[in-house]
Image (cartoon, rainbow, N blue to C red; front, side, top):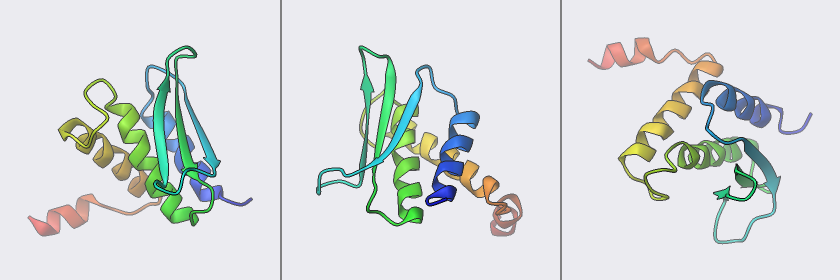
Length: 111
């Protein structure tokens, strides 16, 4: 299956960080000035995340995590503020754990 890792990350992220509204993720063509976007569809009460389908799978995963962090921090701002940064670090940590990359030992070595 094409994009298998991408959809595994989407599933894991949605399971581990549920939001108050459903999240719909689409790999589609997006405007050339962006790699993806996120918005809240108020009438349907759902988040929509679009990731450019032309991106390589690993880049698409990174864009998805970036946009999902926006959905997690939606109440504060659409910008890259502190709450967005915390959300982004949480979803990225989930990715590392999903892929079996041990981070606790690496952090301990740095201290």
